[in-house]
Image 1 (cartoon, one colour):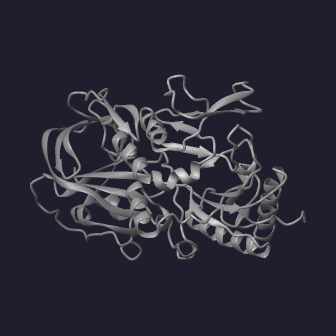
Image 2 (tube, rainbow, N blue to C red):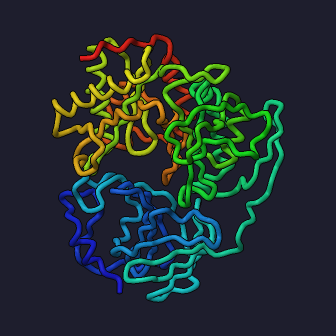
Image 3 (spheres, rainbow, N blue to C red):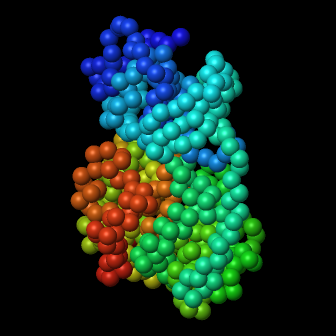
Length: 457
């Protein structure tokens, strides 16, 4: 039976912008309206709401409803919401129930094929959702939602020519992100961003992180180039001390042109990871030309606290005559690049550790410089260990495997200074392409004037 009692108990109209209607009769409608709201709470999820008996009957679907026919996802039944909520967009205060940003992802009408206490079968008619779905109760509030229809055959293959190279592209319609971003979208993004991305991949061996069945499924790192790689792909045999596979060397891909980038994207290599050093034309490993601070928010902190950490690190760098270039990680945190010239590879890691430990000492309530997860609550982990020459970081302009196709994005210091909420520094693939049109590559000057690290303190 429709009831807004639980909804009202969880909300105070004086503290939240959400509609909190007074007690009274529920409105009468046609039971045919739906809305899907994108909800950036503790974790991003999608709230699916159906008009029913004067309320919005609601489920939280962590991965959203864009999926292939036959696929199944979890849907958590939540309290009924008032009909006014169908138009709600805004920011719920952080400490309130459901705190975070809410926006309308899709809305429209639906038709009911079946509606019982344990099974709901409907067809959506929205701008994004257009198809038949069935919700089945699994246990208590946990339901499963499945898209009906014939499974789509995504095994089609097309041949294309890219800068004189023949490439076979497969499964272009396969959905790799919950919001409907397909492999074709991934390839097209990398095609458009190539003039900027390739400059940052040049002379750096690339580690691919592949998601052949999308971000919801298993993934794996691939350092050693597959034997199925095209003959024209340039590779470099490099030492791999401490390799988990026990290999002394591996053949890394050197992605230095558009065909190579399209080849990687077709493998569903959503993420491209690179070291802070380059190699010479005959495979000689050079000393690092970059130092990186990886700012990782612990429980209770967000990208906002990472932005503040970047500003504090900038002050220390300025004392030492160094320049930092900020970028988002595209995931939870930020990274700060510092172009350097060193004669000993270990010096970048030593210096980064000195800075991290200084921050943790001077601001122990805000920062931590050790990996122990138990000490990270309410603090930002200033990860200096990424400067180990065996480690890699996400490349600028690389996609990330999140719920949305977010990107590791260079940002201006002004943007970092003005950051007031985490979403201020979250950019998706379409956002980044617009930013490049407007700003160009904010890392274009990255290697123009490398600094020299101070002597050991």
